[in-house]
Amino acid sequence: MQPTGRENKTYGTVSPDKLRELTGLEFVQGLASGALPLNQMARTLGYDILEAEKGRVVLTSEPKEDHFNPWGTVHGGLAATLLDSCMGLAIQSTVEKGIASTTLEFKISFIRPITADTGPIRAEGKVLGSGRRAGTAEGRITDGKGRLLAHGTTTCLIFAVPAP
Image 1 (cartoon, rainbow, N blue to C red):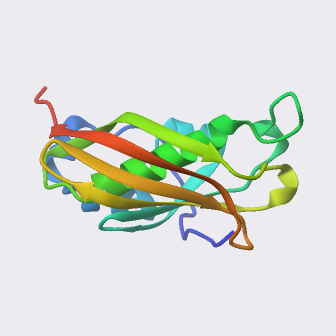
Image 2: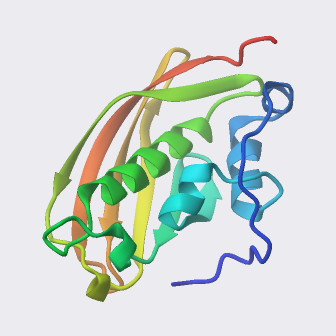
């Protein structure tokens, strides 16, 4: 797994006041750089943001036994969370100051099993289209050899960050 450069990760939430000050790209790049806290789910599942640019976000994770389902493979919830996150953040990276997004729906397909032996995985989300009210994106999870493990699509609602 490539290092993120983030030595002292923080986890938590970003206040609505702070969200209103940032463009979507500034927000996502703040998460990637460590200037803003990652969400608690990132700590729970052990993922990080590796790259963030307008319309594209890459997450990394290293599957472990903590992620296993009863059959000894990584639970599909890890892949679902990685895809939901990379696709949603890719859409967020396209919005203006004071605008947020949230997942309306997503679909994923599992191609290969993910195990502890898979090694580091990479989830890349790319925007297909982003407008005033909705955005769509696609995502792919690959292993270190570039093999496709899972892929998905999402639709996100785009809205003004609510006032307190």
